[in-house]
Image 1 (cartoon, rainbow, N blue to C red):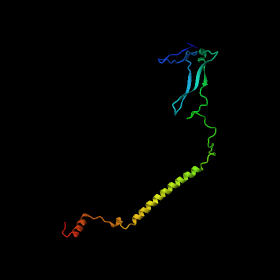
Image 2 (cartoon, rainbow, N blue to C red):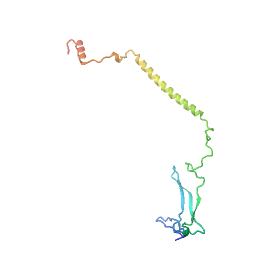
Image 3 (cartoon, one colour):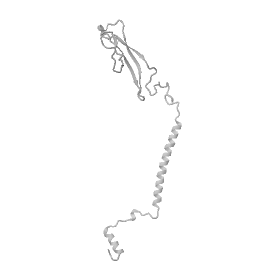
Length: 167
């Protein structure tokens, strides 16, 4: 079975495994392929095909090799493993050191937003302080220091004074 070719097995669906090529060591010289599966689209793209080509004037039994070389064939050209499959630009849009982009407007907008948030926080704190002060100046307010908790004996004494007949 050395240096022979024959048709491979056929499945129940009628799909053949293709031609089987045997090398000088009676091992199958396989046909390989390299595939790429895109991460976002789950598509399979065959990129490279590797076919076994017999080497002329080679004795595989004496040098213990199969006497086959793989011939690489690129099927997909201009390939780049990105979402759109295109090569990146030679130079970034903003340059290599961001010298082509102006961020002044973004910086001013961010600073204004932070200033607005700080002003809102200060206004809220001032409002709460002013509200507390206005409540403290009310005439009907009773402070905790002006109150006293009565015990049961004192309460009975006060009730008996207010009611001449007692309980």
